[in-house]
Length: 95
Image (cartoon, rainbow, N blue to C red; front, side, top):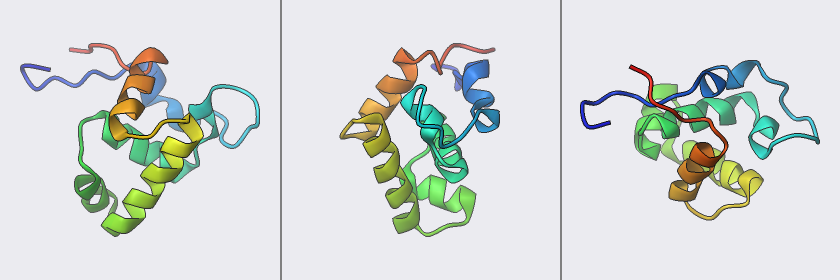
């Protein structure tokens, strides 16, 4: 990341095409389509306000999506969301 490179695995890039809302599987597989979009932008390093701007939604709406993401992952902070992404193999270095 020192050069501004993004660290995204193929799994993260393809998260949108996975089944959404299934009761089984990893917690991130239960995200709604919009939650996937928010999650991807957060993992790319965007702030909640930046996510809101990118998706053309209110910052409060982006915050609500983040709250649901944290709830589904069983974590309390956005930093823990990133740690989850790392541990779940959703991040890696791509050049």
